Image 1 (tube, rainbow, N blue to C red):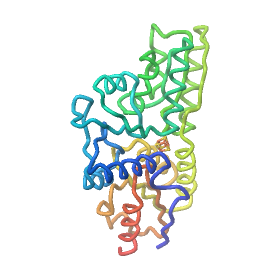
Image 2 (image 1 turned 180 degrees about the vertical axis):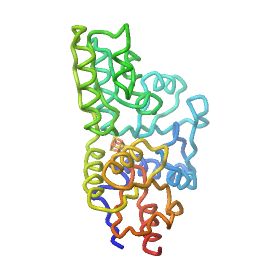
Image 3 (image 1 turned 90 degrees about the vertical axis):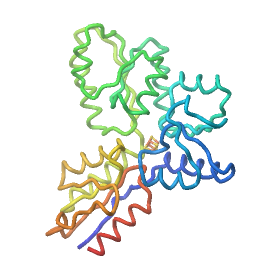
Image 4 (image 1 turned 30 degrees about the vertical axis):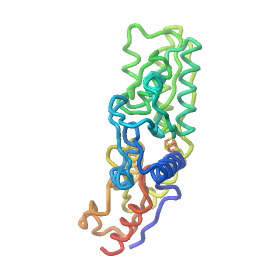
Length: 280
Ligand code: SF4
């Protein structure tokens, strides 16, 4: 059996940076709180809990006087609430997410109604709508936008950082089709993260060669789910959270296996999956 890893996999730049900052602060201060989970990955969160990292559910749940903001960022209203309570912030918002937030603010300030191609319940998307002063909407279905009776004429379209570029393009095309008859003015800004773009391209390239793709990551992780969907367009694909999820029956008759992993999956989890594959 041949096992091949995709060119880009595991921790992305933004997650690595956030985890390093939190590890260092937790070590120096004997523990720290994060506002919401730092990453969408249970194994990483367990490891952080082991060094004293506590997750505050919301601003009211922060017990100490310092809180870490995750790579997904927060909205400006939440930031105001934290400042009002004199709580210090250690901001690990990823630079790619900041670019999205600033684009949303600029569009809203210029009079555009902001449309984010993304999941409306995702932390990053909710925070970004906050940066647009809540003058916007998030959707994955362009039809939802097209059916809005009170849709403003000036529309600014952005993407959640972890979306698939081709699907974003399709979304934009559908919005154009649906809105041009309303004398609309559209501004589109490509805000997909460069790491995600590369990771998806590498995963797809590998998926086209192998018998089976294993995508390692948390089921709650948006970018992991996108990777699995993308690989499934090319070959048989399974999403695993840990090595324990490998079903030996899935490997029968498969001689070439490809591995990729979400941006919040640790190298240790990836190594454990490969070790188990070799053992099987
Ligand atoms: S996936 Fe991209 S945007 Fe998200 S944290 Fe990683 S580098 Fe930043």
